[in-house]
Image (cartoon, rainbow, N blue to C red; front, side, top):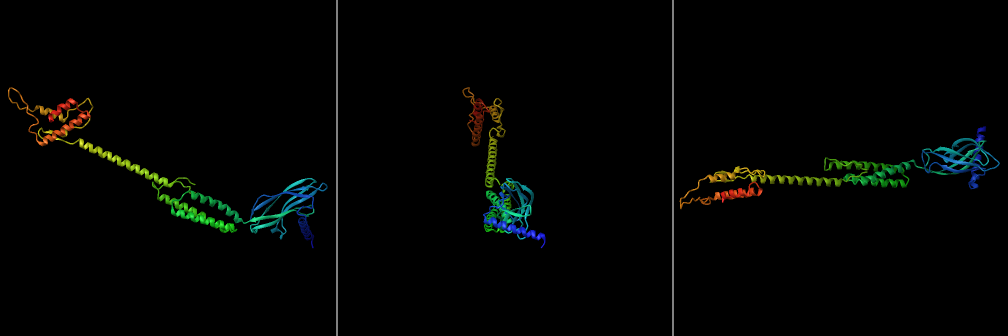
Length: 375
């Protein structure tokens, strides 16, 4: 047997004896070196993770100093191969002194999920290993971490989609199916089937994306104005209410329609009045053309001659029948021998005179003078 094999066997024997003594004594060290503040750098470790453990060694022996060649950590998956994660030290801890050390390690991706034992050791000057502390660490499924990260993302997507208040029936159907897939994913995770849970979460996320696309197409095709839909941030929101947008558009259209109808009515009324004001009257007996009567407004101080005044002047020029009875001149009565059409014409002419007097286009004196011609 070679010296190397003898040394290795002796190391294993010493390590085994040390562990047994620790277990019998309740974990307290029989050596003068005490380990304090052992600390892993993470609360959870997953398959394929890297980690670090730190601890402090304290020499409470007043007579002996300790030579530390290296510090180590060994997990149960390393026992068969007799391998360790090591940090070389080559340091002497004097009586009453202390030193803090770090040992880095990695967890193989193929490590089984569950609890695993470990031991922290230091190696002395003569390559003699000494166990300082032992314990267990739980190794989590790497898919567990992926699942919970993805679960948070999908939760946010579902909440955002719910707040968007889909109008599209297809989008609402996709969202409902996404919620079902999300619930199924949680059931898988609670039983430790994280990979299946991840697949369900991915399906839920794809359905939400599909719902957002369906909602965008729906709003574009049902928009009241130009097919514009509000910026979605389907998934934020936002927040813009599609129903309010449609309602406002309908109200605006109604207001425009009422305005147009009112304008057309006003224009038609003005045209009707203008046409009525241009109506022509004809006096058969005098030959006056009433189309010459103008309704144009003039300034108050300027009273243009109108057809009615001309009619008056023409009437005055007609010679009256002179009768020599008792040396008196008698004018024939204008009311005598008028036809029905003449009387109707005179009534219309008087009506026009009254309107002109009311508008102020003729004075009272002119009105009285012209009125006599038609009575």
